[in-house]
Image (cartoon, rainbow over the protein chains, first blue to last red):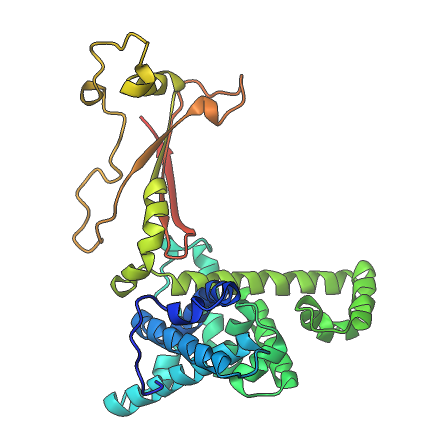
Length: 179
Length: 177
């Protein structure tokens, strides 16, 4: 959290009211960002909180003359770090295993609600669990449409490391899912 | 394994230089093994994307507030009933505005019409299933089938449940007896 809390009526409205471009960006990125946060293991309330806060910080960043390049990775990076901070403080408070919480991701997916076939969904869940945390994060950001360079900026790793992680992760999934 | 295999995922993600991408393009035109592999990488990537969307869109209680904007759209599609055209025409004719100038049948007030609208669940839902708004949309069969292809006497009831992101997460169809 930024420590400072400014109430505003709708998520990101402080950010979005500034210009049509900002509103468009907000519309484009809000859902992918919240989805990514939920997949990192945040509750939907926390995901909404963190995403609002990230948009607010982006608003401050841009209005104080900050660079407008790489906005997408800027936003995801701020949100990613906040999500990790929250998980760490949760961990310290309740002494739960972070490793266990890492594996929570899509476990609540029930086959009858899925467009994926039951068997495929099961295979995929098992395969996703076999990925390392970095591989999983790279893959999730990639699925939200981020380029390798952006993923590297979000996670603070080199683009070539992203490429390696994505390559390993996709091969693992393909192998375990027999596609 | 083919030497190009290591470039396939980069190629698929548009992370190669145009010149490199072109060599992979050319290679894929003649290497069946790589083509199959690229196809499987693409499939599993698509599945993964779908998987995390479904996972993140699970309608948990705490996520209900996100669904408000979708609720209107969802309400329109929760159930979809396909019936023979004749009774539907009667239904439409019994709407007062549309029946203006037409002799509205005295015996066809909306409430007295035979119940064609079916409730999605015949039994009361189990207590752990959250109550959902159910609206049924009647679509005349002749609006969906070309003339001549109209299935005579066949009806279908399809139930949708929309996930928070608007994608249909349940589709169940059954004959409409």
